[in-house]
Amino acid sequence: MEFLLSAVKDPGTDPVAFTFFIGCMAMAAASVFFFVERNSVSEKWRLSLLVSALITGIAAVHYFYMRDAFGASGNTTALRYIDWTLTVPLMCVEFYLLTKAAGATKGLMWKLILASAWMLIAGYIGEAFNPEGGSTSHSVTWGVLSTIGYVYVLYSAWMGEVAKLAESSGDPVVQKGVRTLAWFVLVGWAIYPIGYMCMPGGWLNGVGFLDADTVDLFYNIADAVNKIGFGLVVYSIAINSDK
Ligand SMILES: *C/C=C(C)/C=C/C=C(C)/C=C/C1=C(C)CCCC1(C)C
Image (cartoon, rainbow, N blue to C red; front, side):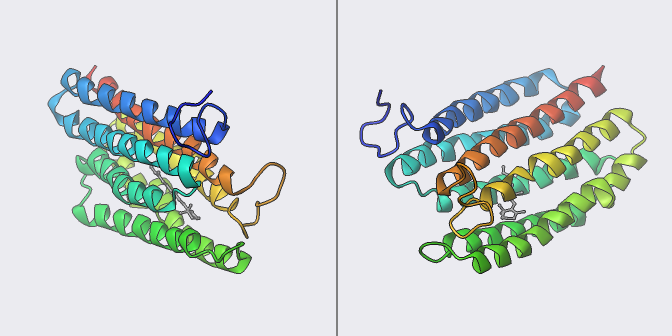
């Protein structure tokens, strides 16, 4: 069955194309949910819920375009990185908002944003400028450089400033919430480099069923877990601390 009018990879027959289709709906639904639920939490959590709605809303629009791009050419790299460049900094803003009451500064927020921007720029160079047919040295070099930015965010969430601020907040709901987000960064964000390694020249390309298309499969699964998951954690912090 064909879903789209002119697609080489159609969501009706291609499993990876189908995850783009589902991604559109999941992100759009999550965005509406967080936006509407803003009204049922106390004042101090409304901005956090709005940011969750923006993250999933921005992703929904990108998924709509990526679904078409994937169907037509299989190449979504530019759209993917535009999406991440907007949404990952907003996830850093979430960390800032959650620890603000405990004394988080804008400086902390900008450090996280800078580290994640580094992670994404290096990742983009790794993917977009991967030579025809794939180059292992190119993909590994930029993958490693990107990982430095990732490790900084991971460190901050588990042991650095974010973790310490959450600890000193004295609020068990915030402590548990920030710890859960730190798990997302450790486990959920780690799905992305696995996808990255499936590109031509990458370490996992050609292992089992892993090929250039599975890059998008991993990214789509990771986006659903992280963008919707992050939002739900923030939502549960808001509801539980209001009790
Ligand atoms: C909503 C989008 C999110 C949370 C995107 C996160 C992306 C990453 C954590 C990407 C990480 C990468 C590496 C650590 C190395 C290889 C290149 C990347 C960019 C895939």
